[in-house]
Each structure stands twice: as structure tokens, then as C-alpha cells.
Length: 290
Image (cartoon, rainbow, N blue to C red; front, side, top):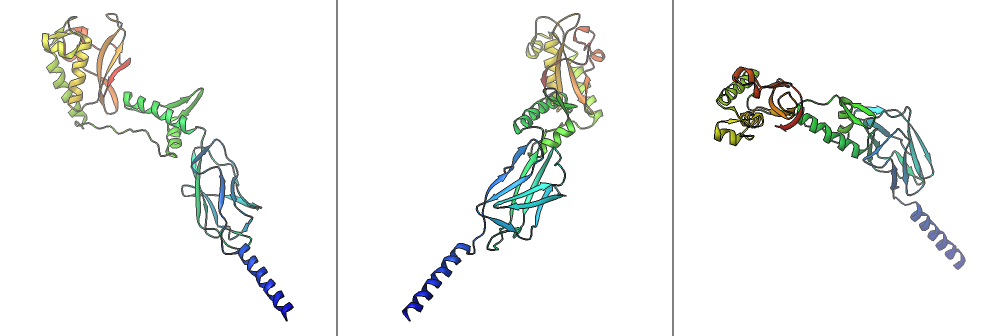
């Protein structure tokens, strides 16, 4: 009798131990490659490692780029789930991997919970994206248009492609232009009023700043450029000062204003009798911009 009782106790203990081994726990993810929110240079198989051996559940696993479902092949070996794209993943896109509840299970048949991770395939690193963004933003601020390309060494990336790439990281170039004078005719009328007011000042080498020109009643091209620039900006008109070489000076300055997205030379010849304020070309080094 005691022998049978001992055997029964032993069997019960063995059953309890087996229950503790299988239990109701679920497998836990210990590593993901590519890592969540990472940027990789080219397409690769996605590997998900768990803390124990796993097997196929309902295999409801999705790889998406936005709303587009990417075709994949799913394999399991030991504690690793591999998701291989049927075709190489396109560069310049963000991808999201979704493991739905019960997609894989442990050996006891307990399915995992919902899990998601994302990564980007890109020819540019995050540091390169930020550098290109900074240069593109500076270009736009100076020209009120986007550059045609963003250069990285000898590589030229079209601006539309670059914008798509940086958008994967939530980055964008600020292309918003605000002005208190909205219509083209309104801008030209306001510029005419400013130029007419400036025409009372003569040319003199004695003043190179707007304040000095106003004080003595005359100034050089630097003084007039600063004066016109300040007046246009105060009126809500986007303007800039450019500097270039002429037959009179190696550092001549004139003003342009933004009209319908393009830079237009201030109409000096309409309002000034002296040629010393005239613009002689429409490009140069940007001295001030706003």
C-alpha cells in the first residue's frame, strides 16, 4: 500500500513539474534585425529571435510599406523567425513588420501577442539626411525655390527623391512663404512706393549704411541696398541683397524682391537718375535674405 502511495506521489510531482515547464507563458522576442527604427542600406531578410524554441501558429505576418503589402516567405528554425521579401525591398521607403496575435507559438502551443517593428531602406544615413536637409533649407531660404539636386560627394539625388527619403524619418524642407502683400500687383505697387521714397536720396561715398544715408541725404550702393531691403521687409515683401563685381566696383550691391516665386530686380532705372544705384546683373553672392 505504501509503495503504491509513493508511486502515486511521484507521478503527481512529475506531472506538476511538466506543467511548470510548458505552462501558459508565451515566448518573448529578444532581438530584431533590422532593429526597430533603424536605417539599412539595402534589402535583407528580417530575423526575429525569441527566448525559446518556436513553431508556426496562424502565420498572420505582414510586411508593409504604407498601405502596400509586401510579399514575403516565412521560415522558422529553432528560436528564430525569418521573413524574406519575395523581391528586394525598394530603397527610399519605410517598412513596417506586423506579427499578429498567434502568428507563432511556443512548443506548448501558446501564441505570441501583437508585435510591430519598423525600419527604412535608404542610400543615406540619418546624419546624411540631416546634412542634406540643412543645405536644402539654406538654398530655399536664399532663393525661395528648391534645388534641383542634393549632392553627396559625387552622387546627385533629385530633390523629389531626397524629399521622399527624408520623409521616412519625419523630416521635411520648410517651403512655406508668407507675406503680408499677397497679390502680384500689390507687391509691385508697394515696391514702386518704396522706390519712389528712396529716389530723394542721392549718391555719395560718404555713407555706406542706411541710417547714415538718411542722416546726410545721400549714400552709396551699400547704403541704398540696405535701405530698400529694410523697407521691403517691413512691408512684408521677401527681398534680398546680392553682391557682384562691376566696372565701378568689385563689391557692388543691389536689391531683388520675390514676385510669383521668382527673384526680380528692383526697378532702379525707373526711379533714379544716377546709374550708381543700378543693378547690372541678376545674380551674385547673397548678402541678406528675408
